[in-house]
Image (cartoon, rainbow, N blue to C red; front, side, top):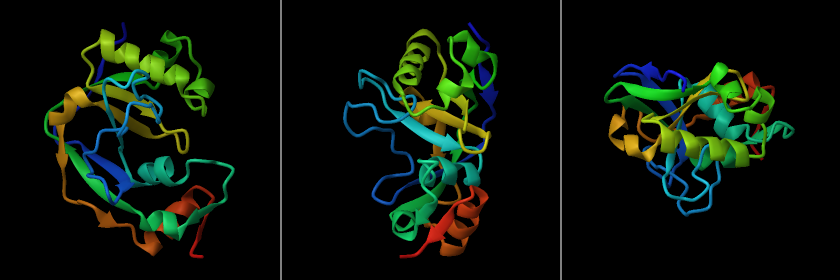
Length: 184
């Protein structure tokens, strides 16, 4: 088994989320898995975080790489928040040898078929005491965290709680990913 990585207490995370949901929403709402490390059986929930705002924007607003535009209407439905680690986090690394240890390549890890990554998430949840998974964004190669709901107490809302993403911010962030911010 690979050695868990630690993120220190006080670490700041960024999240872009639907305005209708709490920044601390662990999903999905139902039992059907929707995201990369969601439980295939629907038994536990996940909270997806990025270590910087740019990566949070990419993971949320640039979901389909072939789509060249980020619509202002999509941005308007979202808010940005910061979360802070209330204790040290133990994360299972899927950023280097951890990928190969599961018989995966980064191509598969970053693919759009989530069945394998969901199965790996379930295995990590069942066989380790990890608070979540440390993984690499498929959009800018920076780190992200998928936190299991058993670590719900490990994060709290930080200095930014549900702030609107301003048009200027969205324009700049979209451009970082080669996308055009469109205000229809």
